[in-house]
Image (cartoon, rainbow, N blue to C red; front, side, top):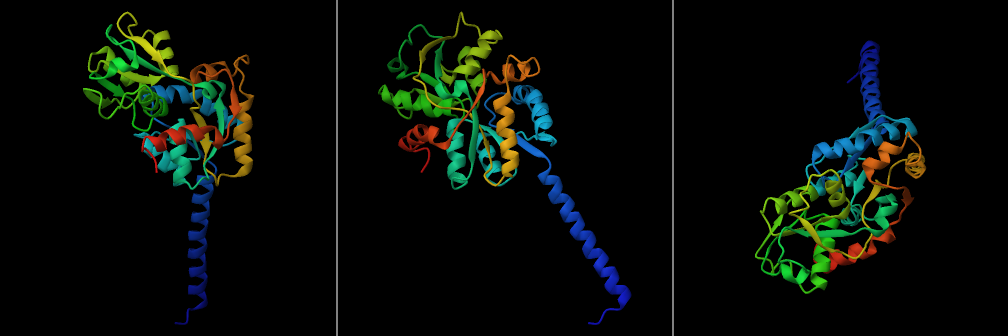
Length: 290
């Protein structure tokens, strides 16, 4: 079919407009830093913790920052693997899942210094539960199935103590989040539970748990846990800016004090995938990853 000069010009204009729209959409995706986090606490608490950090990262990168909430741990892994988010706050186990899901391309960027020696707390309101062995025949709650400190590592240390989480409890529940586990134990829904040591300390400080009723009866050995991970195909210049931004944070700096308090961090330090080999080994031993 032969087109007139007028129609050819019109067609070129339409195609140019479509191309321009595509370029604008692509540029817009590349100029917004999309950040997410595993939902290990309530959505309102996650938003509160992230707000000043998001403002800081926006100033340090020169990019608008958007927090992308998710419904569960698996959704963060998928969002990172599918390029729906650029930066994610992950637990050690979710990082292992992200590493496997992305074929090893996800990059663990930084962790709090506290995350190099993290622990879980086992709590109860019963005077009869004093050791992990005492949990046999009792009702128990983990946090999320994909939680490092609320499931994987507590399960690992239970097994080392001779307690099979799938067989030895009277009943087993998953609360979905660390603060929910405390609420389960405090309300008597379960006789004991396990959670992130940092969240336990925060709830005690905020007087959101009645320590005359609920108490810690066991603290696990330490392990590596949380980190900030970026998708592997993110612009290397941006990755460098993000790493530098976290490493510059200093609680002695008044401008950083609120950020660090909300992140419950004394400082951020570089991390690497090898730090999470122990967690991956525990997950494979428990049959939670293949």
